[in-house]
Length: 398
Image 1 (tube, rainbow, N blue to C red):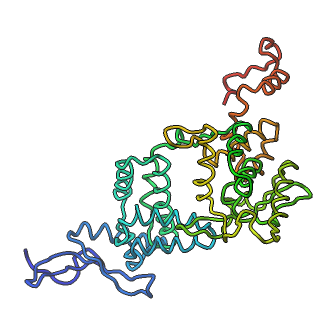
Image 2: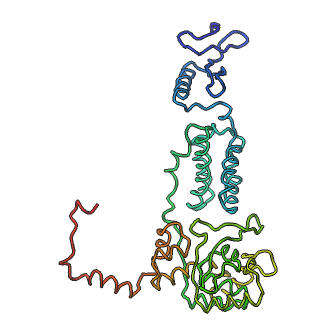
Image 3: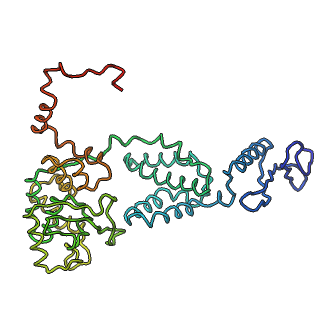
């Protein structure tokens, strides 16, 4: 090959890169970096066509404000992901942060030493392939993908990337629609049969309040005496106790709607709560269930009290309890719905962000309910008289 020097003819800004013997080994595109006071930079390609294509794209990015400096593109995935995580620490619960950390360390650490700009669609697809190969559920696939996507979107927003390689892959996720959670409520009698097998005192009272308030375990553990309104028979959620990495610590309720919500309980149940407070001589700032410990340990309670009570009450199969403590939350909601509590009130008591969540989980309580059937007949008749029913024309059905 003939030796050449300097600029490539008819290619402004592109120069030959030469070997020691003077032959051409590549083509260097030179340009002024708008992010570094016009510093002259260069990028070398094997072929002239590659150099021209990159030069064209780079010029377009500079002109339209989408240019990214090489230093930012070279930033590692680990650095960007930790920067993203740091921004969430101030506003998310410790358990949520722990969940993100788990996904980043277990599933996404494969990219830790790679530059953020080197991660492509194929890498995201390979991630999904590994998840499915291990037989993980659709919901888990979505959770892992959503963390990866969130970091990549952050990288775009902060100028590390032009576009997220995860965006086009999202449509390839398996549908989680058929894997939605199904509630398993008990009747009041069933719930009380289990609770009755827990020794009297704070451990039984914990289960009773779970049944009569629908609070989550962490919310119950976080109840302080000042949250108990004995005059109005109301219990209020202000904080939680969370297990973060095996260590109990104060936390905030799961959603904004969960915080500060007030739920009424029967006077008879409040009398028991009040008697317990008086007997223990608990001060207003004391945790209701902590006893001599700093915090109430829910997992210990579940193993030492709930599981034996389930076995004693006959809720047992193949060496395992068939009912979870969380089912008391669903039992509360189902009983209140069956009693006619309006959906928007039930949503507030449950602390759900949307009423859709409340109704999707608990609408089954109306199936076969004779009161609901009577209401439908009163509103719409038996179905035999259709003279007054307005029939939709095809154009109206949409």
